[in-house]
Structure formats: structure tokens, C-alpha cells
Length: 271
Length: 130
Image (tube, helix red, strand yellow):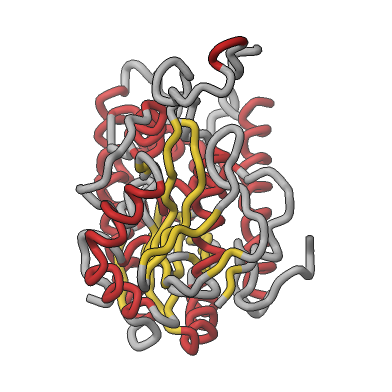
């Protein structure tokens, strides 16, 4: 499509605002100290992807890239780019990650409406994150293992299981729903129990923690931890230990280091 | 201070499970500034809804009940009438057992690593596997 250039008089015109069909914006990834510089080329969100650059004002800076607001936006590639940029930065310097999708009209708006307008708040939050990163512990129940576990602990469920075994699906629909509901509740109780156990095991090995909502019905644990640089090895050891304890029950994963997504925003960092 | 590109993020496409992890972190987490001028971005809303809704429903219950039924087949051999224990059931049994063993292997590998699975490049180290 040759929609990008208008022939004739439009060429060289200063009238940028009207008739161009493109609405440019400045996409913001996060806030960093002003002495941060981007050394490698990093491709940002959008199609075509803009290069990540720094917009600074006094002691603060924003990681941004140009984005065409009239195009489509929010693809899996965009989501991954947003997170990878923030995580790679967070591994080196403190960064306040913005929620996905923050677009300002231009660099001027970034400086005045974002950086200058919140300078004290941002500077304080960045100090809190100095030398700290986030990890996420995510566990998924092995379905057969957890079903066997909850069934063995409840007689009513065991009875219902007998009733539906080999029976016509439609004829036993009520029993099936009742059994499924009980299982769902039992799994939720297990989730609570195991999340508490994870929190206990991490006690003293993190600065703060934040329990996330389950994202799947078989989610076992899903907790974000803010940890200091010298706690990272302890965290790996604790999680490996739990993975062994929970072998066959829960597939446990340690994600990170990443930007402190769960410790900025509404909640106060370090709280 | 400088910012480097992560060393381990090879050019490969993100895995489905990786994308789920990404969504968990960036769609409803992170800093929100009410003062900024947000441009309306339609696609995001849809994705958010699709990805985040985990509500126990009748469908969930029926799925659990069905899973229990399968569990019976794999774990209890006695008492199954012959007319049920046909080829189809045998196939299901074999499949379930295989999946269980595979899961066990995976966990052993994980524990045997002496460390935890990492999804990103190590800190302050980069470029070893590009």
C-alpha cells in the first residue's frame, strides 16, 4: 500500500497534524535514573517497532520508543518486547515498570506530564528498588496427583465418584457438577495451604512478597518476591528444595530476575 | 550506568507458556499514572479479558468430574466390567500413565539441575548463548 506518502503539495508541507493519517505517540516502558543509557539496540513495541531510547529530565529518565497509534497494537510480540526490555534493564539498574500500554502524545509530554510531575515519587521508589529485583514462583498441580490427593481426603467425593463411574453422562450430570464443585473447592484450599508454605519457606530470604491471583484452575502457587542481590542464591536454593518436596504434586518454576512489576503502583515499594 | 541487551534471549519465538508468564506480569501489574494521556488501544482490552478470566464454572466442574473418571481407569484395575475395559479404555490408561511418568522425569531433571529453571539471562552475564 502506498499510503504513506502523499504526492505533490503535501510533500514538504509543515502541516503535520492534518491529513497525514498517522498518529504518532511516545510509548513508555519504565522510569530509570537519568544516568542510564541504552547501549545496545533494542526493538520496542509496535509494527514497525521503534528503537528504545531514553528521554531524561533532571535526575529521572523514561525508557521510550516511537509508536504509530493508528496501527494495531497489543500483539504477543508487543507484550514480550515490553517485558524483555524492562527485565533486561532491571538486571542492571533500578527501574519502575509501567503497565503495558502507556502512550503519551510526545517526548515533551513524557518530560512534563510524567517525569517532572512525579519526580519526588519516582525518585523515592527508585531508591527503594536499588539493588533489588523481582522473582516469581509459579507452581501448577499435576492434575492426577492433586485429584487423587483430594479424593482420598473426603468420603463424600469418593461416594460421588462411585456414582458417576461408567454411568451415563447426562443421567449423572448433577452428581458430576457436585463432585466437580467439591474438587474445585478442595483444590482452592490446597492452593491456600501451599501458598502459605511457600511464604513460610521464603521468610527471611526476601524483602517483600505479593500473592498473585491464580491464572489457571490447577495453579498451586503464584507469588512474586522482591529480593536483594545477595539473596538471589538463597531464593534459588529454597525453591529447589520445595520443588523436591513437592515432586509429582506440583511442577514448580522460578521466573526471574525481572522488573519489580508487583511492587510498584498502588502498593508502596518495600511494604 | 549502562543497559545491555539480555544475552540469553535468542531470536526464537516465545513459547505459549512463556507468553502466559509475560501476560501475568505486565497487563495488570506495573505502575499506572492517572495523569498521563493514554491513547485508546483497543486490542489490549480483548487480550486482557481472554487471558485473565479464571472463574470456577459448571464447565470447570464437569471437566474435573471427567478427569476423576479417567483417574479411576488408570489407578484402579479391579471391578471394571469387561464391556468397559475395551480398547478405548486401555488406550486411555496407557496414555495417563505415560504422562505421569513424563512429568516425574521432568521434575527429576529440574531437581537434578541443582538449581531452578531460569527463563531469562543471568544477571550481569551475557552473550554466552546467542
